[in-house]
Image 1 (cartoon, helix red, strand yellow):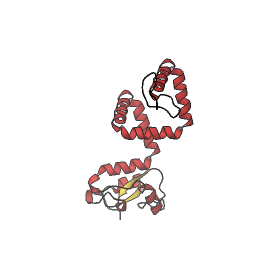
Image 2: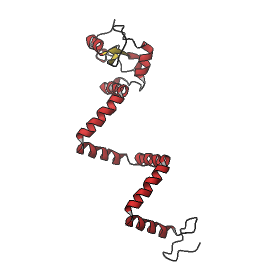
Image 3: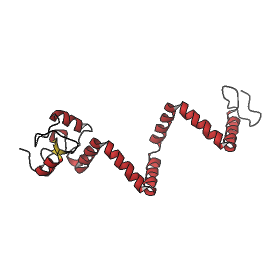
Image 4: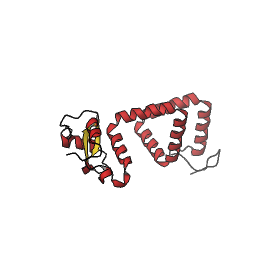
Amino acid sequence: MKPCRICGSSDRHPSGKCKTCHKQRNDQWRKNNPEKARAAIKIWKEKNPVKVAEDRAKWASNNPEKISAAVRRYRNKNPNGAKRASNKWKKSNLEKCRVINNNRRDKTKGRLSPGIVGMLFAKQGGICPACGLLLNKDFHIDHKVPLSKGGLNVDTNVQLLHAVCNMKKGSKLLT
């Protein structure tokens, strides 16, 4: 291919245009027309949502430290907003919160599966083993053999109890 008459580059688009010169013209146009450039980018993003999502995911996987720093900056500037967002997530992810809290309690004695609450609810038929009544939203994940008595934090050692029943039971074995 012939080199470009303007810059001397031989790097060309399939259309024959010089890539270097074309990029410089585009950059200059964007600099001179920022509103039009933003509008064009917005239209492109609306037409290519899959590509946008892929690009974001790729960038996020390559830049975890930038994401952590941005989250820290946001939380420092907006403590109330961050707290509201955290509470909103917790309300919509109750099962995950319960499992995370139980796993945090004693990491050395095992970990619970992510879907354990649903499995236990189905296994128990929605019934509290302590009082025999139907479970509502106010229930706890209880260890059959308490951690203080040497029990493990594993799926086979947990059950769902009403919060009141669990508080009465304490660290005793359920008989």
